[in-house]
Length: 238
Image 1 (cartoon, one colour):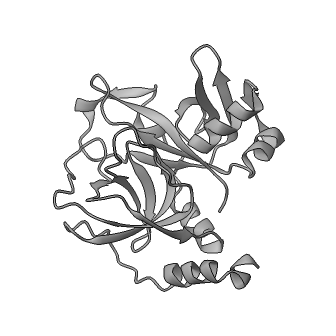
Image 2: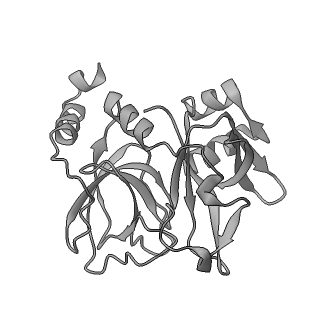
């Protein structure tokens, strides 16, 4: 196996698997936190907190006009800001970092598969508790998650709208046919490179370099008073 041959891979494997576990996420100002990246945009980075194995969203202070360079399954270390800003009722999992996180390596394998399966959103209602693409910000009370990890019933499909250059993810889940704006940079670059309007099934897996088993979805910060659903990651099983 690769991790047995590569010293850096062995080191990050030992680091992650020897990490102390805690029953809850540490959100103390100034605390050092470790995460496994699932999806990253300029607005927030979704991670599995490696101490509690809970889903979190990190607000990272990227410099202006700088795009995130974090990718799925990166292991990152950050320090929480003195004001973690946990008062956003639409994004109860979000915390603010004091500075850019440090990338330590990449971690994959059986444990990641187990964590992802444990974090799957049950298909017992509409995505994020409401139908349609968005909901008014004032309707949120901090009781609903703003991150959902989905095992699609059908798809996913990756679709490109040439008229405006946007990329969309379509999938079936809980009886709904769901279309979400795609913010996964790897997926966007993939379909742009193919110059095709749609990627599905084997073609999608070949183009991405993996079979997408999960769709990572998040709620945006308010835009004109509404929070929008989007896809921030297409993920393999690990």
